[in-house]
Length: 401
Image (cartoon, rainbow, N blue to C red; front, top):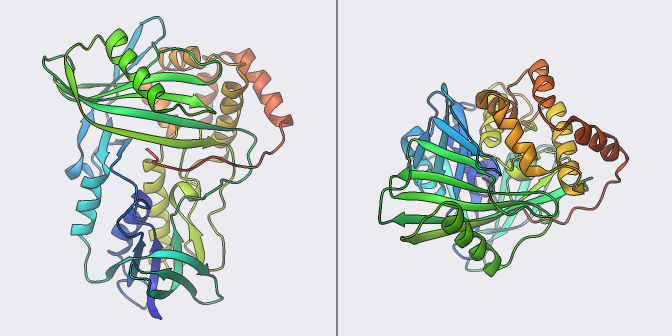
């Protein structure tokens, strides 16, 4: 059995982020940690290319590999009213997974050891944990470490009162004429058909006057089939955006659970969960990349100080409680999702909404924002949510934003 200081299972956003930052520190009395990065062999077990979006204040560690960034965001109401605002000093950023992965792997030093293998078991221990896996040729491999961080998606999430799915398909479009404003990203375009419960919206991220990622997204319980997504995108690009002559260069698709389930990050004395499996996804939005960064930073600080590196849930308890109420209100049909989001952005500073969604707002400001939403519907949802039973989880975890 090969011995390491850390074993990281999974090489998606969470695994690569932790490996990137942990490789640069010194462990007390040891020095730079020896890290094994275990990832599935090439094939269907590896996710395809995807796009991650997030916002942050000022420059960030991934600015050199961003696909695009925007300093102005717009939200369009069902009636077509546009709320557009500059969000400085924040920026909304788009990062493509292949660029992120290439950048991170290029920076690995000799203390990071990639291992292509399928993990079959993780055995906890008092002083060490053991990761057991099988290589592509069938050979078994065992890796021991003081700490194991598992970023693999849970096959079934924990029980929850409410679980919705954020499901979406995007087209990377190229138009024959200049039709996009590359300085402004459309965060939510609510001029889409309203589902019986939940909400649907379009999402336009222009990278040039003739190129953009255009997505159709729904928050509800049931995903669409192939024809459903394609029809929704044709309707959105044609009838809503008025695009006439364009080609689709690529597609992306994903499903993200939006759940009020609780995700324990410590699953053993030496074994921890990170990323979406460790509660990094914000339930009300599906955004995960920013939570991953905060979670990884906390783990690295603990390792540097010789402390128990338990990954934190990167969202405040009160924000998770608020998200749970919103999910219930959307799922029950008590809340008109399109009107809720339109009012939220129209009646508040976009920067303050983003600060709230990233966990940086004050309680007083959150109360003020709450008063701009449908108070009666949300109050009823508070009571109903408190009485709702926990249900077994059943949603897949794939392609977090």
